[in-house]
Amino acid sequence: RDKYRFYACLLRARFDENKNEKDMIKATMMLKAGEEEFWANQHPQPYIFPDSPGGTSYERYECYKV
Image (cartoon, rainbow, N blue to C red; front, side, top):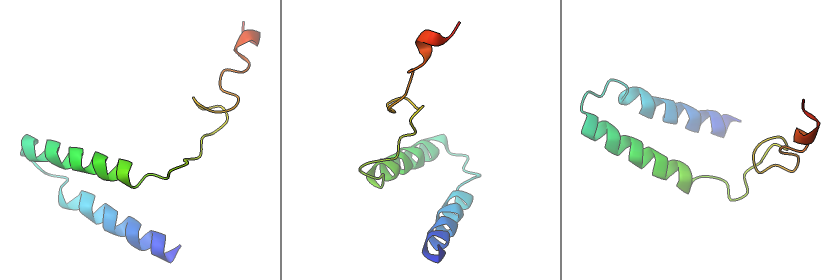
């Protein structure tokens, strides 16, 4: 937990450094870099809730709805 909290604080600090960015080109580039970092660090087998799209019981009871 301590390790997670440390990295969570570092990530929050990165957001706070750039929260008032006025240059839209730079902000768009930071967004693109952040999305790439997110996809690169994503778990290879993410947890999917059963009722979520792609889950085992997604839309299972649709035929019973009125």
